[in-house]
Length: 134
Image (cartoon, rainbow, N blue to C red; front, side, top):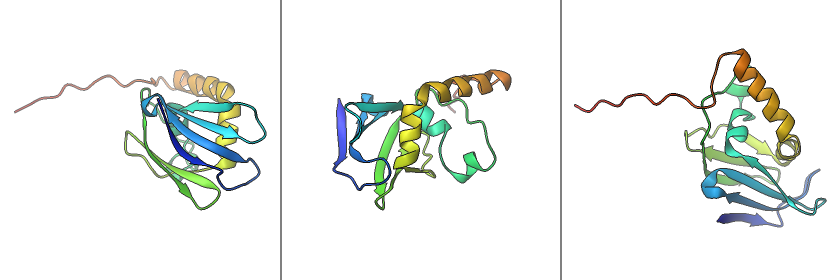
């Protein structure tokens, strides 16, 4: 199942013709004019590499985001999207160029992310906390 968010979007250095949120929000797929197929990236990678001040400026290692979903997404001007995730994070503005970087380099970015997690003793999944009901 996929949801089409727009077609014939505004043009920048990387022309995006179509955007789809697939797999119940787990994946974002982008159709670039210069490429024959959709390129996709998982919500976890988008969130852990959010172009927001709290992540970029401090080089914060974001962890525990496996299974995260995209819950909302809307255009920002003619050059980017603001994405809201199931953890309610919505501070990043993802330019079309940055999305192209993430989709075309996702394997290298993912390997580096996994290496950083290991070196910092962090996990992709946080242990479930016990819930107490009174």
